[in-house]
Image (tube, each protein chain N blue to C red):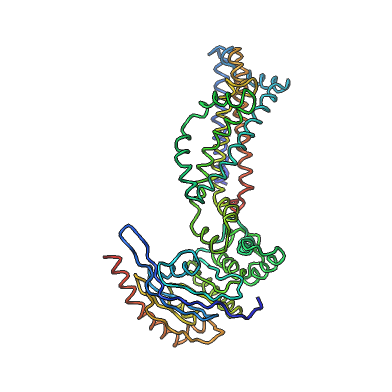
Length: 256
Length: 265
Protein backbone atom coordinates (compact mmCIF):
# COMPACT_ATOMS: atom_id res chain seq x y z
CA UNK A 1 0.00 0.00 0.00
CA UNK A 2 2.66 2.48 1.07
CA UNK A 3 4.88 1.14 -1.70
CA UNK A 4 2.22 1.75 -4.31
CA UNK A 5 1.59 5.29 -3.14
CA UNK A 6 5.32 5.92 -3.18
CA UNK A 7 5.38 4.83 -6.79
CA UNK A 8 2.38 6.99 -7.60
CA UNK A 9 4.10 9.92 -5.94
CA UNK A 10 7.16 9.31 -8.07
CA UNK A 11 5.05 9.34 -11.22
CA UNK A 12 3.40 12.54 -10.15
CA UNK A 13 6.76 14.12 -9.49
CA UNK A 14 7.85 12.95 -12.94
CA UNK A 15 4.97 14.82 -14.58
CA UNK A 16 4.99 17.85 -12.33
CA UNK A 17 8.15 19.43 -13.67
CA UNK A 18 7.21 19.64 -17.39
CA UNK A 19 3.55 20.45 -16.75
CA UNK A 20 4.40 22.98 -14.08
CA UNK A 21 6.89 24.67 -16.38
CA UNK A 22 4.32 24.92 -19.19
CA UNK A 23 1.70 26.29 -16.77
CA UNK A 24 4.12 28.89 -15.43
CA UNK A 25 5.03 29.89 -18.96
CA UNK A 26 1.35 30.22 -19.95
CA UNK A 27 0.38 32.20 -16.85
CA UNK A 28 3.30 34.62 -17.10
CA UNK A 29 2.42 35.44 -20.70
CA UNK A 30 -1.26 35.80 -19.90
CA UNK A 31 -0.34 38.20 -17.12
CA UNK A 32 1.43 40.32 -19.72
CA UNK A 33 5.05 39.45 -19.10
CA UNK A 34 6.69 39.21 -22.52
CA UNK A 35 5.42 39.85 -26.00
CA UNK A 36 3.32 37.01 -27.35
CA UNK A 37 4.42 37.80 -30.91
CA UNK A 38 7.99 36.78 -29.99
CA UNK A 39 7.32 34.37 -27.18
CA UNK A 40 4.20 32.38 -27.97
CA UNK A 41 2.31 30.75 -25.10
CA UNK A 42 2.01 26.95 -24.98
CA UNK A 43 -1.59 27.26 -26.17
CA UNK A 44 -0.49 29.34 -29.19
CA UNK A 45 2.02 26.64 -30.08
CA UNK A 46 -0.61 23.93 -29.68
CA UNK A 47 -3.02 25.80 -31.97
CA UNK A 48 -0.34 26.25 -34.61
CA UNK A 49 0.73 22.62 -34.21
CA UNK A 50 -2.81 21.54 -34.93
CA UNK A 51 -3.12 23.88 -37.93
CA UNK A 52 0.10 22.62 -39.49
CA UNK A 53 -0.91 19.03 -38.82
CA UNK A 54 -4.29 19.46 -40.47
CA UNK A 55 -2.93 21.17 -43.59
CA UNK A 56 -0.30 18.43 -43.98
CA UNK A 57 2.70 20.74 -43.90
CA UNK A 58 4.11 19.28 -40.69
CA UNK A 59 3.67 15.69 -41.89
CA UNK A 60 5.65 16.50 -45.02
CA UNK A 61 8.62 17.88 -43.09
CA UNK A 62 8.46 15.12 -40.50
CA UNK A 63 8.39 12.51 -43.26
CA UNK A 64 11.47 13.95 -44.93
CA UNK A 65 13.38 14.18 -41.65
CA UNK A 66 12.44 10.66 -40.59
CA UNK A 67 13.47 9.24 -43.94
CA UNK A 68 16.88 10.88 -43.66
CA UNK A 69 17.34 9.79 -40.05
CA UNK A 70 16.50 6.17 -40.70
CA UNK A 71 18.40 5.86 -43.96
CA UNK A 72 21.47 7.45 -42.39
CA UNK A 73 21.05 5.46 -39.20
CA UNK A 74 21.04 2.15 -41.07
CA UNK A 75 23.84 3.18 -43.42
CA UNK A 76 26.03 4.16 -40.48
CA UNK A 77 25.22 1.62 -37.78
CA UNK A 78 25.37 -1.60 -39.81
CA UNK A 79 29.00 -1.20 -40.92
CA UNK A 80 29.86 0.17 -37.45
CA UNK A 81 28.58 -2.99 -35.76
CA UNK A 82 30.33 -5.26 -38.24
CA UNK A 83 33.64 -3.44 -37.93
CA UNK A 84 33.41 -3.16 -34.15
CA UNK A 85 33.03 -6.94 -33.93
CA UNK A 86 35.92 -7.50 -36.34
CA UNK A 87 38.08 -5.19 -34.23
CA UNK A 88 37.39 -7.32 -31.18
CA UNK A 89 38.09 -10.56 -33.03
CA UNK A 90 41.22 -9.61 -34.94
CA UNK A 91 44.01 -7.62 -33.43
CA UNK A 92 45.39 -6.27 -36.75
CA UNK A 93 41.96 -4.82 -37.58
CA UNK A 94 41.90 -3.15 -34.17
CA UNK A 95 45.40 -1.72 -34.56
CA UNK A 96 44.51 -0.44 -38.00
CA UNK A 97 41.30 1.33 -37.00
CA UNK A 98 42.17 2.57 -33.52
CA UNK A 99 44.08 5.72 -34.55
CA UNK A 100 41.53 6.52 -37.27
CA UNK A 101 38.69 6.42 -34.78
CA UNK A 102 40.63 8.41 -32.21
CA UNK A 103 41.35 11.10 -34.79
CA UNK A 104 37.95 11.28 -36.48
CA UNK A 105 35.57 10.80 -33.54
CA UNK A 106 36.07 14.26 -32.00
CA UNK A 107 35.56 16.17 -35.26
CA UNK A 108 32.15 17.89 -35.12
CA UNK A 109 30.32 16.06 -37.86
CA UNK A 110 28.30 19.11 -38.88
CA UNK A 111 31.63 20.60 -39.97
CA UNK A 112 31.64 18.03 -42.77
CA UNK A 113 28.39 19.33 -44.27
CA UNK A 114 29.98 21.58 -46.93
CA UNK A 115 32.21 18.72 -47.99
CA UNK A 116 29.23 16.38 -48.20
CA UNK A 117 27.24 18.93 -50.22
CA UNK A 118 30.14 19.03 -52.62
CA UNK A 119 30.24 15.25 -52.84
CA UNK A 120 26.55 14.34 -52.78
CA UNK A 121 24.73 17.48 -53.84
CA UNK A 122 21.86 19.32 -52.26
CA UNK A 123 19.41 16.39 -52.13
CA UNK A 124 18.77 13.74 -49.48
CA UNK A 125 22.05 11.92 -50.05
CA UNK A 126 24.26 14.53 -48.39
CA UNK A 127 22.07 14.62 -45.26
CA UNK A 128 21.87 10.84 -45.11
CA UNK A 129 25.66 10.66 -45.42
CA UNK A 130 26.07 13.14 -42.57
CA UNK A 131 23.82 11.11 -40.28
CA UNK A 132 25.62 7.90 -41.26
CA UNK A 133 29.01 9.38 -40.41
CA UNK A 134 27.79 10.83 -37.13
CA UNK A 135 26.22 7.57 -35.86
CA UNK A 136 29.13 5.43 -37.04
CA UNK A 137 31.52 6.44 -34.26
CA UNK A 138 29.51 5.92 -31.07
CA UNK A 139 28.28 2.58 -32.42
CA UNK A 140 31.67 1.21 -33.49
CA UNK A 141 33.22 2.16 -30.14
CA UNK A 142 30.37 0.64 -28.12
CA UNK A 143 30.34 -2.51 -30.23
CA UNK A 144 34.06 -2.98 -29.86
CA UNK A 145 33.99 -2.41 -26.10
CA UNK A 146 31.03 -4.78 -25.74
CA UNK A 147 32.70 -7.52 -27.77
CA UNK A 148 36.08 -7.08 -26.12
CA UNK A 149 34.50 -7.46 -22.68
CA UNK A 150 32.81 -10.76 -23.42
CA UNK A 151 33.89 -13.11 -20.67
CA UNK A 152 36.83 -15.30 -21.58
CA UNK A 153 34.93 -18.48 -20.79
CA UNK A 154 32.64 -17.93 -23.79
CA UNK A 155 35.62 -17.70 -26.15
CA UNK A 156 36.97 -20.89 -24.55
CA UNK A 157 33.68 -22.71 -24.94
CA UNK A 158 33.37 -21.61 -28.57
CA UNK A 159 36.89 -22.79 -29.34
CA UNK A 160 36.61 -26.07 -27.46
CA UNK A 161 33.30 -26.86 -29.15
CA UNK A 162 34.70 -26.34 -32.62
CA UNK A 163 33.30 -22.93 -33.60
CA UNK A 164 34.59 -21.57 -36.91
CA UNK A 165 35.33 -17.85 -37.24
CA UNK A 166 31.92 -17.40 -38.85
CA UNK A 167 30.10 -19.12 -35.99
CA UNK A 168 32.19 -17.20 -33.48
CA UNK A 169 31.23 -13.96 -35.21
CA UNK A 170 27.51 -14.59 -35.68
CA UNK A 171 26.63 -16.71 -32.64
CA UNK A 172 29.00 -15.62 -29.92
CA UNK A 173 30.67 -12.24 -30.37
CA UNK A 174 27.62 -10.52 -31.86
CA UNK A 175 25.21 -11.65 -29.16
CA UNK A 176 27.73 -11.15 -26.40
CA UNK A 177 28.17 -7.55 -27.52
CA UNK A 178 24.46 -6.92 -28.15
CA UNK A 179 23.64 -5.15 -24.86
CA UNK A 180 26.48 -2.68 -25.47
CA UNK A 181 25.55 -2.37 -29.14
CA UNK A 182 22.09 -1.23 -28.08
CA UNK A 183 23.58 1.32 -25.71
CA UNK A 184 25.47 2.66 -28.73
CA UNK A 185 22.36 2.64 -30.91
CA UNK A 186 20.45 4.72 -28.36
CA UNK A 187 23.18 7.35 -28.38
CA UNK A 188 23.30 7.15 -32.18
CA UNK A 189 19.57 7.78 -32.48
CA UNK A 190 19.83 11.00 -30.48
CA UNK A 191 22.96 12.06 -32.37
CA UNK A 192 21.25 11.52 -35.72
CA UNK A 193 18.46 13.99 -34.89
CA UNK A 194 20.96 16.51 -33.55
CA UNK A 195 23.16 16.59 -36.64
CA UNK A 196 20.33 16.27 -39.12
CA UNK A 197 18.30 19.20 -37.81
CA UNK A 198 21.44 21.32 -37.79
CA UNK A 199 22.20 20.31 -41.38
CA UNK A 200 18.65 21.03 -42.48
CA UNK A 201 18.96 24.59 -41.15
CA UNK A 202 21.31 25.55 -43.92
CA UNK A 203 21.48 22.79 -46.46
CA UNK A 204 17.93 21.84 -47.20
CA UNK A 205 14.61 23.10 -48.53
CA UNK A 206 12.54 20.67 -46.48
CA UNK A 207 12.65 18.72 -43.22
CA UNK A 208 12.00 19.88 -39.66
CA UNK A 209 15.31 21.71 -39.46
CA UNK A 210 14.32 23.73 -42.52
CA UNK A 211 10.90 24.43 -40.97
CA UNK A 212 12.52 25.82 -37.84
CA UNK A 213 15.10 27.91 -39.67
CA UNK A 214 12.67 29.20 -42.28
CA UNK A 215 10.13 30.29 -39.67
CA UNK A 216 12.91 32.13 -37.83
CA UNK A 217 13.73 34.02 -41.02
CA UNK A 218 10.05 34.87 -41.47
CA UNK A 219 9.69 35.62 -37.75
CA UNK A 220 6.93 33.02 -37.38
CA UNK A 221 7.94 32.20 -33.87
CA UNK A 222 5.01 29.87 -33.20
CA UNK A 223 5.90 27.72 -36.22
CA UNK A 224 9.49 27.64 -35.00
CA UNK A 225 8.34 26.23 -31.70
CA UNK A 226 6.16 23.68 -33.49
CA UNK A 227 9.30 22.42 -35.22
CA UNK A 228 11.21 22.22 -31.95
CA UNK A 229 8.35 20.37 -30.25
CA UNK A 230 8.10 18.01 -33.22
CA UNK A 231 11.78 17.07 -32.91
CA UNK A 232 11.28 16.41 -29.21
CA UNK A 233 8.28 14.18 -29.85
CA UNK A 234 10.10 12.26 -32.59
CA UNK A 235 13.05 11.75 -30.26
CA UNK A 236 10.75 10.43 -27.56
CA UNK A 237 8.90 8.06 -29.89
CA UNK A 238 12.06 6.63 -31.47
CA UNK A 239 13.62 6.14 -28.06
CA UNK A 240 10.57 4.22 -26.81
CA UNK A 241 10.54 2.14 -30.01
CA UNK A 242 14.23 1.43 -29.56
CA UNK A 243 13.66 0.20 -26.02
CA UNK A 244 10.95 -2.10 -27.33
CA UNK A 245 13.23 -3.50 -30.04
CA UNK A 246 15.95 -3.98 -27.43
CA UNK A 247 13.57 -5.89 -25.18
CA UNK A 248 12.70 -8.22 -28.07
CA UNK A 249 16.28 -8.58 -29.29
CA UNK A 250 17.74 -9.39 -25.88
CA UNK A 251 15.21 -11.82 -24.39
CA UNK A 252 17.84 -13.26 -22.04
CA UNK A 253 17.85 -9.93 -20.21
CA UNK A 254 14.06 -9.70 -20.16
CA UNK A 255 13.41 -10.23 -16.49
CA UNK A 256 16.56 -8.70 -15.08
CA UNK B 1 24.19 -43.39 -26.53
CA UNK B 2 23.97 -47.14 -26.56
CA UNK B 3 27.58 -47.55 -27.61
CA UNK B 4 29.74 -49.42 -25.18
CA UNK B 5 32.99 -48.43 -26.79
CA UNK B 6 35.65 -47.19 -24.40
CA UNK B 7 36.81 -43.60 -24.47
CA UNK B 8 40.05 -42.14 -25.71
CA UNK B 9 43.51 -43.17 -24.51
CA UNK B 10 45.86 -40.40 -23.47
CA UNK B 11 49.62 -40.47 -23.30
CA UNK B 12 51.30 -37.43 -21.79
CA UNK B 13 55.11 -37.37 -21.87
CA UNK B 14 57.43 -34.85 -20.21
CA UNK B 15 54.87 -32.06 -20.54
CA UNK B 16 56.11 -28.59 -19.72
CA UNK B 17 54.42 -25.23 -19.70
CA UNK B 18 56.14 -21.91 -19.08
CA UNK B 19 54.53 -18.52 -18.97
CA UNK B 20 56.44 -15.37 -19.67
CA UNK B 21 55.41 -12.89 -17.03
CA UNK B 22 56.73 -9.54 -15.88
CA UNK B 23 58.87 -11.04 -13.13
CA UNK B 24 60.45 -13.62 -15.44
CA UNK B 25 59.31 -17.05 -16.50
CA UNK B 26 56.81 -18.99 -14.44
CA UNK B 27 56.90 -22.73 -14.81
CA UNK B 28 53.30 -23.91 -14.52
CA UNK B 29 53.90 -27.52 -15.44
CA UNK B 30 57.15 -29.45 -15.37
CA UNK B 31 57.93 -32.98 -16.46
CA UNK B 32 54.37 -34.28 -16.28
CA UNK B 33 54.03 -37.90 -17.38
CA UNK B 34 50.63 -39.52 -17.35
CA UNK B 35 49.06 -42.39 -19.18
CA UNK B 36 45.31 -42.73 -19.15
CA UNK B 37 43.65 -45.93 -20.29
CA UNK B 38 40.53 -45.85 -22.47
CA UNK B 39 37.44 -45.36 -20.34
CA UNK B 40 39.36 -44.44 -17.22
CA UNK B 41 38.15 -41.80 -14.75
CA UNK B 42 41.20 -39.88 -13.52
CA UNK B 43 40.99 -37.13 -10.92
CA UNK B 44 43.66 -34.48 -10.47
CA UNK B 45 44.05 -32.74 -7.13
CA UNK B 46 46.58 -30.19 -6.01
CA UNK B 47 46.96 -26.85 -4.29
CA UNK B 48 45.84 -23.68 -6.06
CA UNK B 49 48.27 -22.72 -8.78
CA UNK B 50 49.64 -26.22 -9.27
CA UNK B 51 48.82 -26.07 -12.96
CA UNK B 52 46.03 -28.61 -12.91
CA UNK B 53 43.72 -26.33 -14.86
CA UNK B 54 46.56 -25.53 -17.25
CA UNK B 55 47.00 -29.23 -17.93
CA UNK B 56 43.31 -29.52 -18.70
CA UNK B 57 43.36 -26.47 -20.96
CA UNK B 58 46.25 -27.93 -22.93
CA UNK B 59 44.36 -31.19 -23.31
CA UNK B 60 41.33 -29.18 -24.46
CA UNK B 61 43.36 -27.37 -27.10
CA UNK B 62 42.82 -24.00 -25.41
CA UNK B 63 46.49 -23.62 -24.56
CA UNK B 64 49.77 -25.00 -25.88
CA UNK B 65 52.58 -26.71 -24.04
CA UNK B 66 56.10 -25.34 -24.28
CA UNK B 67 57.63 -28.80 -24.14
CA UNK B 68 56.85 -32.48 -24.16
CA UNK B 69 54.05 -34.21 -25.99
CA UNK B 70 50.46 -35.29 -25.69
CA UNK B 71 49.16 -38.14 -27.73
CA UNK B 72 45.44 -38.81 -27.72
CA UNK B 73 44.15 -41.98 -29.30
CA UNK B 74 40.57 -41.00 -30.04
CA UNK B 75 40.07 -43.28 -33.00
CA UNK B 76 36.46 -43.55 -34.07
CA UNK B 77 35.12 -40.82 -31.81
CA UNK B 78 33.37 -37.98 -33.54
CA UNK B 79 35.04 -35.42 -31.33
CA UNK B 80 38.29 -35.74 -29.42
CA UNK B 81 37.24 -33.93 -26.27
CA UNK B 82 34.61 -31.74 -24.70
CA UNK B 83 35.18 -29.55 -21.69
CA UNK B 84 32.90 -28.75 -18.78
CA UNK B 85 33.89 -25.57 -16.98
CA UNK B 86 33.41 -24.57 -13.36
CA UNK B 87 31.11 -21.72 -14.30
CA UNK B 88 28.82 -23.56 -16.73
CA UNK B 89 29.81 -21.35 -19.66
CA UNK B 90 26.36 -21.76 -21.16
CA UNK B 91 25.85 -18.82 -23.52
CA UNK B 92 23.37 -16.49 -21.79
CA UNK B 93 21.85 -15.52 -25.14
CA UNK B 94 20.91 -19.07 -26.13
CA UNK B 95 18.19 -21.27 -24.72
CA UNK B 96 19.26 -24.48 -23.01
CA UNK B 97 18.42 -26.38 -26.16
CA UNK B 98 20.47 -24.08 -28.41
CA UNK B 99 23.36 -24.31 -25.97
CA UNK B 100 23.28 -28.11 -26.00
CA UNK B 101 23.08 -28.07 -29.79
CA UNK B 102 26.06 -25.72 -30.11
CA UNK B 103 28.78 -28.37 -30.51
CA UNK B 104 26.69 -30.14 -33.16
CA UNK B 105 25.88 -26.95 -35.04
CA UNK B 106 29.56 -25.97 -35.25
CA UNK B 107 30.37 -29.37 -36.71
CA UNK B 108 27.58 -29.37 -39.26
CA UNK B 109 25.64 -32.34 -37.90
CA UNK B 110 22.44 -32.67 -40.03
CA UNK B 111 19.36 -31.07 -38.50
CA UNK B 112 17.30 -34.22 -37.94
CA UNK B 113 20.15 -36.12 -36.34
CA UNK B 114 21.08 -33.14 -34.19
CA UNK B 115 17.51 -32.77 -32.94
CA UNK B 116 17.44 -36.42 -31.95
CA UNK B 117 20.77 -36.26 -30.14
CA UNK B 118 19.84 -33.05 -28.33
CA UNK B 119 16.59 -34.65 -27.16
CA UNK B 120 18.50 -37.64 -25.84
CA UNK B 121 21.10 -35.50 -24.09
CA UNK B 122 18.48 -33.30 -22.45
CA UNK B 123 16.68 -36.41 -21.25
CA UNK B 124 19.94 -37.84 -19.94
CA UNK B 125 20.44 -34.88 -17.61
CA UNK B 126 16.76 -34.29 -16.87
CA UNK B 127 16.42 -30.89 -18.52
CA UNK B 128 13.80 -31.72 -21.15
CA UNK B 129 11.19 -29.57 -19.45
CA UNK B 130 13.59 -26.60 -19.36
CA UNK B 131 14.82 -26.76 -22.94
CA UNK B 132 13.37 -23.37 -23.86
CA UNK B 133 14.63 -21.60 -20.77
CA UNK B 134 17.55 -19.24 -20.79
CA UNK B 135 20.47 -20.04 -18.45
CA UNK B 136 19.69 -17.15 -16.09
CA UNK B 137 16.30 -18.74 -15.43
CA UNK B 138 17.95 -21.91 -14.11
CA UNK B 139 19.62 -22.76 -10.83
CA UNK B 140 23.38 -23.31 -10.71
CA UNK B 141 22.91 -27.07 -10.59
CA UNK B 142 20.64 -27.05 -13.62
CA UNK B 143 23.10 -24.91 -15.54
CA UNK B 144 25.82 -27.46 -14.84
CA UNK B 145 23.52 -30.23 -16.08
CA UNK B 146 23.10 -28.21 -19.25
CA UNK B 147 26.87 -27.92 -19.58
CA UNK B 148 27.22 -31.68 -19.13
CA UNK B 149 24.54 -32.32 -21.75
CA UNK B 150 26.35 -29.97 -24.13
CA UNK B 151 29.52 -32.01 -23.63
CA UNK B 152 27.93 -35.46 -23.89
CA UNK B 153 25.87 -34.67 -26.97
CA UNK B 154 28.99 -34.19 -29.09
CA UNK B 155 29.98 -37.77 -28.25
CA UNK B 156 33.58 -36.98 -27.34
CA UNK B 157 36.35 -39.49 -26.74
CA UNK B 158 37.12 -37.82 -23.44
CA UNK B 159 35.45 -35.41 -21.08
CA UNK B 160 37.57 -32.72 -19.49
CA UNK B 161 36.05 -31.34 -16.33
CA UNK B 162 37.47 -28.34 -14.50
CA UNK B 163 35.99 -28.29 -10.99
CA UNK B 164 32.53 -28.55 -12.53
CA UNK B 165 30.63 -28.80 -9.24
CA UNK B 166 32.80 -26.56 -7.05
CA UNK B 167 30.35 -23.65 -7.13
CA UNK B 168 27.32 -25.75 -6.15
CA UNK B 169 25.82 -26.31 -2.72
CA UNK B 170 26.53 -29.63 -1.01
CA UNK B 171 23.21 -31.31 -1.87
CA UNK B 172 23.33 -30.38 -5.53
CA UNK B 173 26.96 -31.41 -5.71
CA UNK B 174 26.18 -34.86 -4.27
CA UNK B 175 23.33 -35.37 -6.73
CA UNK B 176 25.35 -34.30 -9.74
CA UNK B 177 28.34 -36.40 -8.68
CA UNK B 178 26.12 -39.48 -8.56
CA UNK B 179 24.65 -38.65 -11.94
CA UNK B 180 28.06 -38.09 -13.47
CA UNK B 181 29.28 -41.46 -12.22
CA UNK B 182 26.12 -43.08 -13.59
CA UNK B 183 26.63 -41.41 -17.00
CA UNK B 184 30.26 -42.43 -17.02
CA UNK B 185 29.41 -46.03 -16.17
CA UNK B 186 26.82 -46.05 -18.96
CA UNK B 187 28.96 -44.47 -21.66
CA UNK B 188 32.45 -45.65 -20.80
CA UNK B 189 34.06 -42.35 -21.70
CA UNK B 190 37.49 -41.31 -20.52
CA UNK B 191 37.16 -38.55 -17.93
CA UNK B 192 39.84 -36.20 -16.65
CA UNK B 193 38.42 -34.42 -13.65
CA UNK B 194 40.20 -31.56 -11.92
CA UNK B 195 39.15 -30.79 -8.37
CA UNK B 196 40.54 -29.30 -5.18
CA UNK B 197 38.53 -31.76 -3.08
CA UNK B 198 40.23 -35.01 -2.09
CA UNK B 199 36.88 -36.44 -1.17
CA UNK B 200 35.46 -35.73 -4.61
CA UNK B 201 38.53 -37.25 -6.28
CA UNK B 202 38.17 -40.43 -4.23
CA UNK B 203 34.44 -40.70 -4.78
CA UNK B 204 34.57 -40.34 -8.54
CA UNK B 205 37.90 -41.55 -9.87
CA UNK B 206 39.73 -44.77 -10.59
CA UNK B 207 42.97 -42.99 -9.90
CA UNK B 208 43.88 -39.76 -8.20
CA UNK B 209 46.83 -37.73 -9.40
CA UNK B 210 48.29 -35.51 -6.67
CA UNK B 211 50.20 -32.53 -8.03
CA UNK B 212 52.84 -30.33 -6.41
CA UNK B 213 52.71 -26.58 -6.05
CA UNK B 214 54.68 -24.42 -8.50
CA UNK B 215 56.11 -25.79 -10.62
CA UNK B 216 53.30 -28.29 -11.12
CA UNK B 217 54.66 -31.80 -11.13
CA UNK B 218 52.99 -35.11 -10.43
CA UNK B 219 53.81 -36.01 -6.85
CA UNK B 220 52.01 -39.29 -6.61
CA UNK B 221 49.34 -41.29 -8.39
CA UNK B 222 47.03 -43.19 -6.09
CA UNK B 223 44.69 -45.99 -7.12
CA UNK B 224 41.19 -45.66 -5.77
CA UNK B 225 39.92 -49.13 -6.47
CA UNK B 226 36.40 -48.88 -5.12
CA UNK B 227 34.09 -51.16 -7.06
CA UNK B 228 31.53 -50.00 -9.62
CA UNK B 229 28.68 -49.23 -9.75
CA UNK B 230 29.39 -46.93 -6.87
CA UNK B 231 26.93 -45.69 -4.33
CA UNK B 232 28.63 -42.46 -3.41
CA UNK B 233 26.80 -41.88 -0.13
CA UNK B 234 27.59 -45.34 1.24
CA UNK B 235 31.11 -45.16 -0.09
CA UNK B 236 31.86 -41.84 1.56
CA UNK B 237 30.82 -43.28 4.93
CA UNK B 238 33.03 -46.37 4.73
CA UNK B 239 36.15 -46.67 6.94
CA UNK B 240 38.38 -47.50 3.98
CA UNK B 241 37.31 -44.29 2.30
CA UNK B 242 38.22 -42.31 5.41
CA UNK B 243 41.63 -43.94 5.55
CA UNK B 244 42.43 -43.15 1.93
CA UNK B 245 41.25 -39.62 2.35
CA UNK B 246 43.70 -39.20 5.20
CA UNK B 247 46.52 -40.77 3.17
CA UNK B 248 45.99 -38.40 0.28
CA UNK B 249 45.69 -35.45 2.62
CA UNK B 250 49.12 -36.32 4.08
CA UNK B 251 50.57 -36.29 0.57
CA UNK B 252 48.86 -33.05 -0.29
CA UNK B 253 49.41 -31.25 3.00
CA UNK B 254 53.10 -30.50 2.41
CA UNK B 255 52.26 -29.02 -0.96
CA UNK B 256 49.54 -26.81 0.38
CA UNK B 257 51.86 -25.54 3.11
CA UNK B 258 54.63 -24.96 0.60
CA UNK B 259 52.30 -23.11 -1.75
CA UNK B 260 51.17 -20.90 1.12
CA UNK B 261 54.72 -20.19 2.25
CA UNK B 262 55.63 -19.17 -1.29
CA UNK B 263 52.66 -16.88 -1.56
CA UNK B 264 53.59 -15.17 1.68
CA UNK B 265 57.27 -14.90 0.81
